[in-house]
Length: 108
Image (cartoon, rainbow, N blue to C red; front, side, top):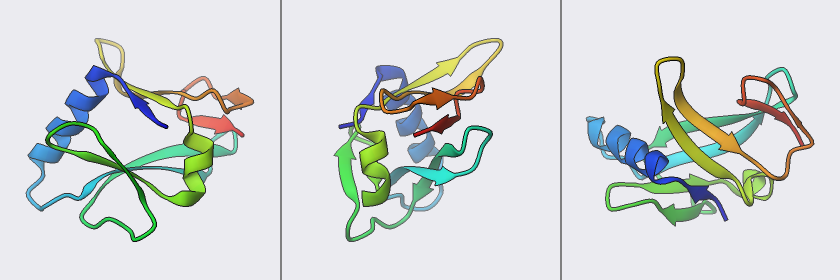
């Protein structure tokens, strides 16, 4: 299960509403890369994949997760920070063995 803070839900809803094309949801995924070996990815999707896991994140949006990423994201908490020094999504994942200082890259 992925947990979203109210700030993350509000940001996702805002991004979905701002798009000009219909959106099936926000995809969160894990891919190779970053300084720690793995990295989080986010993108708005027009179509839901047949094997995607789907989570409601409010009236305006859904969260989509592919089966390969789901085990690495189980228990993940996603927050959205908007301050003078930083703006963006923050990830707190209990499954990681190490993470980069940027918070976007991790080791599984």
